[in-house]
Image 1 (spheres, rainbow, N blue to C red):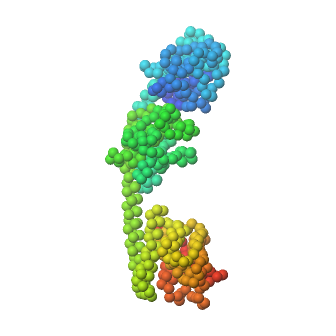
Image 2: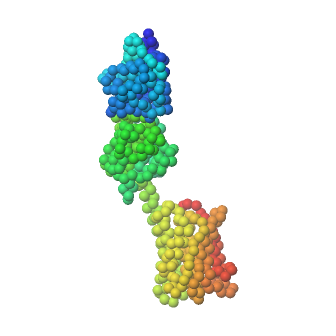
Image 3: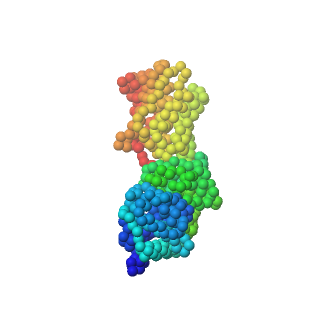
Length: 532
């Protein structure tokens, strides 16, 4: 009668269970209620007959952590033989008894171990414990065996039903993720949407995307939805290294049933910390050329069904195409931007040459060409820095340091001992302003070198950069020769100072050159603009 009632409750459980974790937890409670045991553990077997604790009324915090190797302990033996084992007392002293971490041995005095076998398949075992001696009657033993067979059939039916609906679920999840990631044209956003919605729709604990760096040949972590800083900071891996590297190198999906048992897996400590067990690595391919890998992890031992694997592979193909399109779009934008910059820079050079022609005043052609070279190098400095830094911003201090290096090589006479100092804030300027300020700095530094140290043999030139509430201040000061009495930079005949004044006005700013406490101080102030 008790067996029939317990079996009826199993049918109600199948109807209510939304996942296997809930089903097994309720079955463990039913075993305790039906057998009058103090506790019940359900351990399910993987393909290698390794037993994992999947439900426990005694130590629920050890679910997914405690496990037994093939044939280990009384549970491992029961799984192999397929016959129940009843130990009336002192089960913890029974030959081959294996302790489980987190579960006290003293709880196992009288024990019953029941195999969960159905239709020729080993699903696992149930371990029932009593803290006191326990000798179930023959009728009670038969009842426990019949109920364990019903439980095994229930697990088989639930998994079959889950697989039957798996293809439809995988298709729905695939459609949802594909729609999300195809809605963005930006690479970083595509990658983040991919990991976020793949984890959400397929119920994964962690999803990551690594992309191949063509220069280093490394797989670089580009996106993950994991909150752990340790996981977000995972380093690059070599092609062919670890599981993701192997999937990438082979161009094939790789499935690992338990990463904790996989010697080639890198990061066991982090996997334990995050509670990761099974993983699937799907390469991102463009015409048989791998560009990255999508890795997904589950918190429990999980056999990735064929329909689930196919859905992920289809998703990876779509993601790879979107990633490649995003990269192409960025390259096209960069190319257009570079053409635009080159055109503007050439126009700037032409304007400077026209100014030089009108000004004249050069003693030799060599002097004129030397000035022209310095101005072109100033423009080149900005162009070079932009190619190494952000697309539309460059640091003003870096410009100053680079120009100082050029000036030291080209203009400082061998018999002069001039010390340069660049100081101040990191101020980033957009392309147009950076080019104009580079030309201003070039003229001011060159002016300080050539005119500030005609008589003075040694001294200092300081370049200072500041920004306050969007106003950029730039000062070039030297303690060399004094400015002439009554000096006015607006009336000075120097081409360099005319260029500085003109560029300062183009920036919407102002330029001053004065004697302050024995230093010649050139000051330029203007409002910083945003990105282009």
